[in-house]
Amino acid sequence: MAELVSWRKSSYSGSNSNCVEVAFGETVAVRDTKARRDGALALTPGAWSVFLAVLAASQAQSQ
Image 1 (cartoon, rainbow, N blue to C red):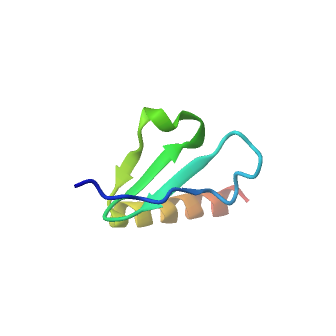
Image 2: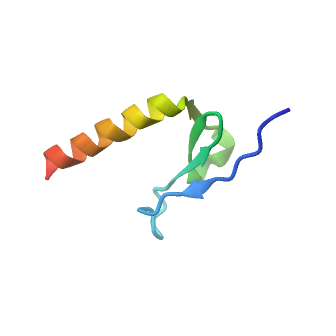
């Protein structure tokens, strides 16, 4: 049976239409709010952690 997930919208999205949503379960799923029917990217929790670390490092370098 498929796992039921609860999608959360990024707190950085605001009223902007460039939004992403994330759902946590056995995997971490990420999707585009505007294109929900196009599916989602599924990541392992470890890959999600690496993604966030790389994103944070990239943000720190750009400031």
